[in-house]
Image (cartoon, rainbow, N blue to C red; front, side, top):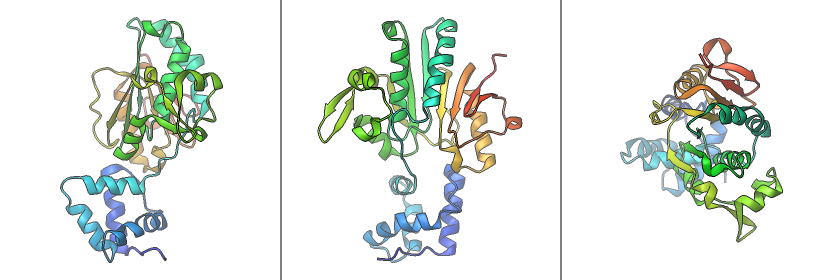
Length: 274
């Protein structure tokens, strides 16, 4: 069955809304929109995108908009994605914090955490580095995503073996227990250190209780217009401690004349100490 076509007017209002509200650029994604939403439109009993979108925008509960976001956003990830970041974390960032942090607290933020593989990898890297002395340290991460659906998956903490291929065998034995259907469940020693919250990166960042030592904001800004990206980076700058590190996706970049972050290496930036 051919995909339902979206009119120019409906395409325009959907694209503008998604960009203004969530920073998501769908200008070149007409085929994706039609492909992912056509079945939903017809299965819900609508004859066209106009009536479907009218229903979405009229819903005051927010439920329909969340369902739409879940359909339109791609959440593909796996454990130990972009391994260079974890090597840098092990060899540079964590030795620095171990030496400088008198409060023995390391607080991370996984700002586009998707289904949880990233924040759980982050905690496993911390536990590996501080192995034998982790009880002396307060190690935790905040994990946020715009999609409640992927956050629910993350909280379940159960993953297929295919997503774990980049993990060392010793990590698999230490931090996972077998589950049915060739799946594995993340151990409580890891999950207890991760707090999941829904959050739209376009909003003011309210997480002010502690400044973050490390922020992972990877493979999400690639969908943003430049002005949206710069505004987000500047907000991230305000909630990271001096000397803290920002990791972005290797397919992403930040204009160096538009941010106060210091460029360290591809996809790694630092907030200056002074």
